[in-house]
Length: 197
Ligand code: RP5
Image 1: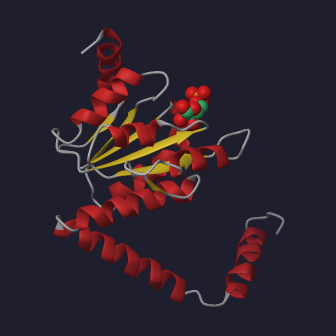
Image 2 (image 1 turned 90 degrees about the horizontal axis):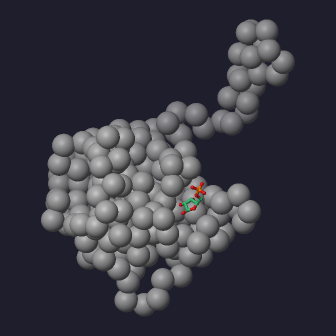
């Protein structure tokens, strides 16, 4: 392990979240990606999927990226979720160093609104796949759900947690079939609190 990798691992051990025996590794290129990637972490938590979250940058800590991706399988990680923005090489480079499934989340960049991230992640050359999700929060949530679906083939409890999530989601929609009811109800509640509708 070289000096750069050692220093990053040392810092991360102090800062990062890690469940016991994580099955999913959520990595992201920068702390600024957390606003997006926390939605993946929250969804995995609500499904009871043990996971870890780490900053691993393809550009700023390339040696750490190689170390993380090549060692993930041996540590018991079964799916990697990688979020990055701009020239988003992290998911593709991670995928090139492991045979684990890698799910890429394009983070919404300031200048190009995440279109750059999306194309960087989706347009992998044949031979190294990255499962690419939507830009931003929706993509982060769906990456967690897709990771759970993959894990569900081997872990029955995760499959059942996913089934329960889907049932509850459907029930919530069916319980509120008329949008005009909630559209009226919300301004009314605000009026009760003295707010303008
Ligand atoms: C990428 O560059 C990161 O994934 C992030 O989305 C983007 C900007 O990073 P910061 O300049 O905010 O650290 O590597």
